[in-house]
Length: 139
Image (cartoon, rainbow, N blue to C red; front, side, top):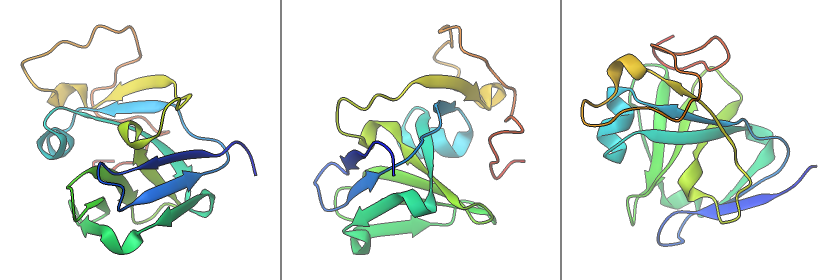
């Protein structure tokens, strides 16, 4: 089953528990992620079969594109999930995990779309759009 990690939205109406391996944190700088979060997304992902969600009735799903949707708490508005319709994984926003999360940064995607008010200078790999390992709606 693997190590379990827990998390929630800001008000606690949606709680989740993950088990098994989590991908390293990918920072997404695309315009949709920036507009939804006010900056950029930081997300890991987990197999659909390795996440349990309590309060799923409090999640509103927004179809941000033809192939992907975004899940957020309908009560407090916390961004929580990103789900590609063709994959059996779900991205979970890093900030939603309880501490200590044990999550590790991996890379930046869609850096050609980043905001003009910040620099990326953490030394992590940067990709103009995405990588073959990270399937997103723009791939």
